[in-house]
Image (cartoon, rainbow, N blue to C red; front, side):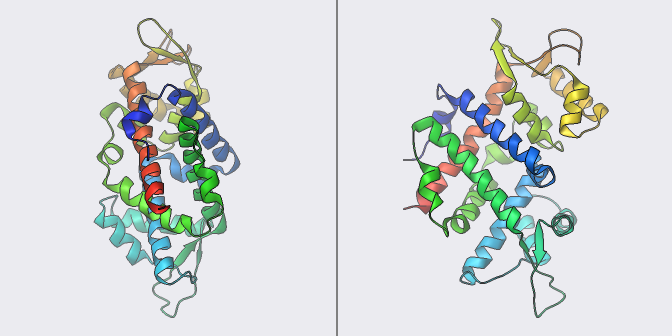
Length: 283
């Protein structure tokens, strides 16, 4: 039986498990910064998941033959699920080609210009899924990662099904206001990972201290302008979600217990989707 979001969110080991997950994701970023940065914003990872879902479904329909997805096919999927505009969807595919994350596929219709994910992209999504399944395994002692490792066809079934569930999940698509300040920020996902990794002691009033002190250093790690990050942190500070133990940007940052709860709930919903999908696909 798959784990429900509430059971995941209230598990006594959820914070250590999410810290390990964040550490693993930050390791991926260090190794493949440009590719990993696609997953570092809400829009970016939804577009990446959408493109892969269209590709894997088309590949299965063609019985595993080499296929590519067209701009038209991708735009239709993106519009159907209201992820972003047609122009942004087309720009996304062009960027994937430009950076070598997708490769052109031969076609009789030259105007279609189909493309398929590169090997490094397939490897990256496989690793991304494995990291989340490892978190679930840590919570209940399961062996999801081991169970899927020998099934070469499972990724093509699992990834589109995960994507479908993510795209209709309100908690994922419409995050709480304080959390949304960062989810739509370029590299906002990386900021969330940095926060999980940096959690320290909980104060008597419920605030949780972090090891983040310098806005300048944080902006450098996230490859964001210091002024832009400063504005976003101020927005979050105005909601009471975070603050500074002393001078802003020169003393340890704290986050509120309610903001941590929002972060955990978002991850719990995502992990529950992974678990429920895997349970169905492995039946």
